[in-house]
Figure 1 (cartoon, rainbow, N blue to C red):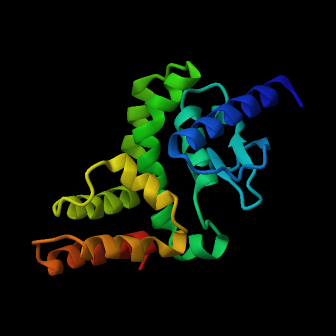
Figure 2 (spheres, helix red, strand yellow):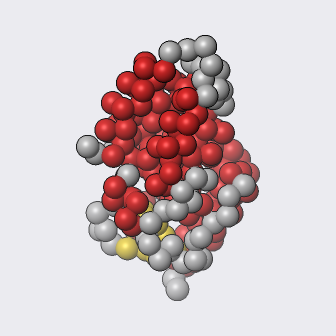
Length: 199
């Protein structure tokens, strides 16, 4: 293993450990962080639970939010290929939104400073923004009933629930809202669920 690969493996281990501690969710990462050339992605957690990182970002601040995002996938419950193919947005939306919330805490715990301009640019152009916005609209609709207050807890709870069960969990939260009509929430849920499931 070359020096860069060793460093990236150590960085990935630190990020995964910290994400697991912050979320209080166990990781399934197998300890392998592989560098790839022109993979067509910045990083990805594979089904074997190793993490691949494109060499193009190994010396850029962009790797930190990317590694946090992949570390969140490693603690995500019930993440199977079949469930992901059916419900990609229910995984990517909560994972990316949680990454944006906890990134600064992860970096602080690891003693790392990240260029905020890089983070802002990543957020503005992120491919999963439609998923992020859809799940956040659902969270806001739930919050109107006073049930969900803290975004970080909402996203951690979603990541801790098997992927296939997340829509039902959110619908159950919606039915617990008291004193508010149910139809407006169902409309918000349905329109955004269509985005999250690609239907």
